Length: 69
Image (cartoon, rainbow, N blue to C red; front, side, top):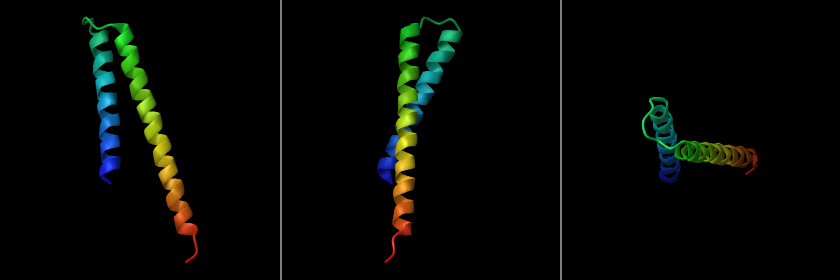
């Protein structure tokens, strides 16, 4: 449970950081578009990885529940 919470927290932090960068860029602050795109890419990859892991965990749980004892 602790590992899952850490992964979700990290993913959330990356999403929040990417959003803040986009907002700063939109406001015209001195933010490089390259950094904004890099942070968005990191957040996207983190979110995709989290989704893939969640899917695998659910599939494993379903497989265990189908096992006959």
